[in-house]
Image 1 (tube, rainbow, N blue to C red):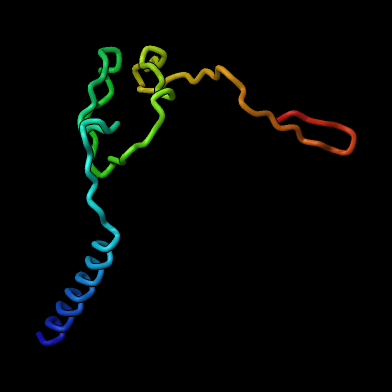
Image 2 (cartoon, rainbow, N blue to C red):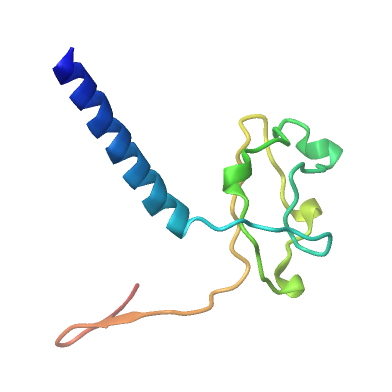
Length: 105
């Protein structure tokens, strides 16, 4: 019984130490009405297969540029909840240089 008591005390000490370490790094996130994050997603009818609820731990404050928002009409989600990516512009191109040749990547 004495060993069990010692083990419980040591476990309690270790747990309190881990809790104090995690509490130092933890900070409360606050979201305002003007932020780009919400708890529940309001999805258009064509995306009704996507589940609108997600875990609160996934929330992050986003500071973004409103001009980078992609309109929902351009994204078509199929029954498997996937979509086809179609590139519309090439932003950068690399060329690999060999001794006598240049190969585009």
